[in-house]
Amino acid sequence: MKLTNFSIKDLITPKAKLTFLVGAGCSIDPPSCLPDGKTMGEAIIRYSCAESEINKILGKEELRDGSKLEV
Image 1 (tube, rainbow, N blue to C red):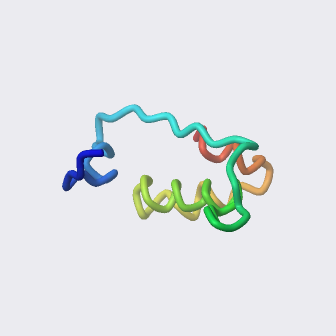
Image 2 (image 1 turned 90 degrees about the vertical axis):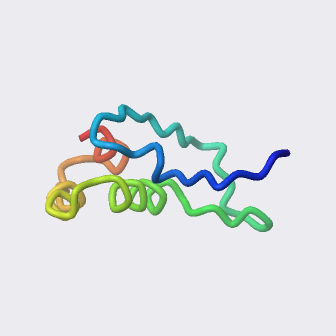
């Protein structure tokens, strides 16, 4: 594998259209210790949304967690 100085932030631009596919196969057990779907979804929202929009999206109790990523 070739190492690069690539960062996921390089992909997130105002004009970028991204899709994050995270499903039931996401392993939260050791050794991967990945976050669960709700935690990962919140992290994606916090990382990729404007600061002014984060609490508006996360505060929408009527939306299922997966639906919040579609906003």
